[in-house]
Length: 328
Image 1 (tube, one colour):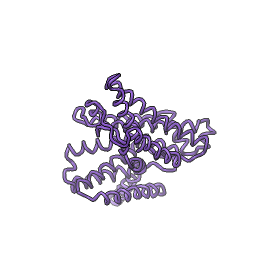
Image 2 (cartoon, rainbow, N blue to C red):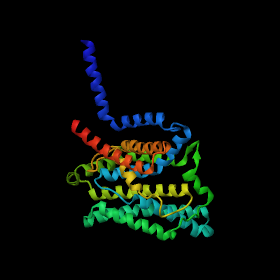
Image 3 (cartoon, helix red, strand yellow):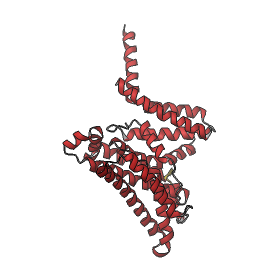
Image 4 (spheres, rainbow, N blue to C red):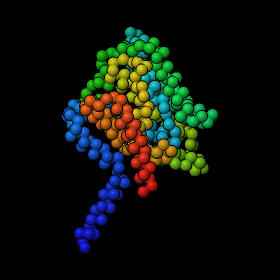
């Protein structure tokens, strides 16, 4: 009698755990499988390489989480990252001889971050005053920013950085890739912002019910615009790190990155309808995508099949979230 009573209790606990932490459990299972089937996956060097690769993606994804929770979307982040790197490269080439390499790079980075913020600000204002969906507005930005990046570089990579600049994207600090520290700082900062501040609570309120949020005194358009501006800033930071890693500013970098960013956010459980999402979930989504991509590369899976698998994963994540919503 006691044994029969314990079994359902244990089964119920397992089901409850699956409902509460679905992607975390799936991610752990994925890692276990890759350790067994992907040669060298669990080596220290490979794991550090995975962390470096996902850092640039994750920095933007944390900002994108806020945008999507607020009920909007940003398709311009890949182009924005490319533009940021090109701006820094241009400043490094144009002003190194007059104000010094260090100051020119710093000035270029500051301008790139400002441009990223203003890009988000413009998108938000277009959304507010002209009622243009951010899907359309950022699609236009996607094209314009990529064109601006190529105009700055003339269509060729600008390798104008001083040697020390490559440390930020390619160097190590205490044995860990430097971008991982920026990635971690962004995670903790965004986690605190979304869970422990009035602004974070306003983001969830606006995405959950925009009209109710407005009636409660929240400036809904300010909240939406600031999430887009914040994502623009994080996009610029990521673009600067990418430029540092490859040693040049080029208008062709980060092509398709916006899709990977959105995929990571969706896999992490953020609803495209707004009002629901976690920074922690996005972290799991970023790690999940990074491990899948790295594992398939180690197993010599064709690049074309990798696209198919990643598409299936995104669809599966959306379906899983829908199923869990119904059974909760």
